[in-house]
Amino acid sequence: QVQLVESGGGSVQAGGSLRLSCAASGRTFSAFTMGWFRQAPGKEREFVAAIRGSDGATPYADSVKGRFTISRDNAKNTVYLQMNSLKPEDTAVYYCAAKENMIFLLTLARRYDYWGQGTQVTVSS
Image 1: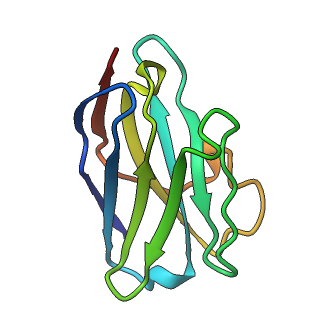
Image 2: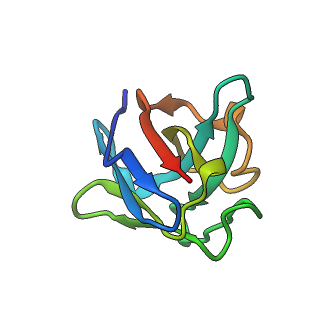
């Protein structure tokens, strides 16, 4: 079993920055592909970014490319999402997700086995 705990959400004005953290416990963290997803009110959960355990590859959603950066610290069992140039449309609950030894289809939420409780990000104009 893997437990994921997100932190770092909050309220910022457009153009501001936030860094989300997701601390994992319970298994060998380095073997896991980690993903960030978000869900706005009335919308489906959508992919934001992922980082593959095997080689560190980092796909991003087009809507965040160039503004968000995902990274991981295996020594701390933590994955981060640095969010810059935030826009009101980035407002959502952000979720961390994990799956062991996942190589393909990192953008699909249904592929992930473990999820955090979510952290709210609110961007005002």
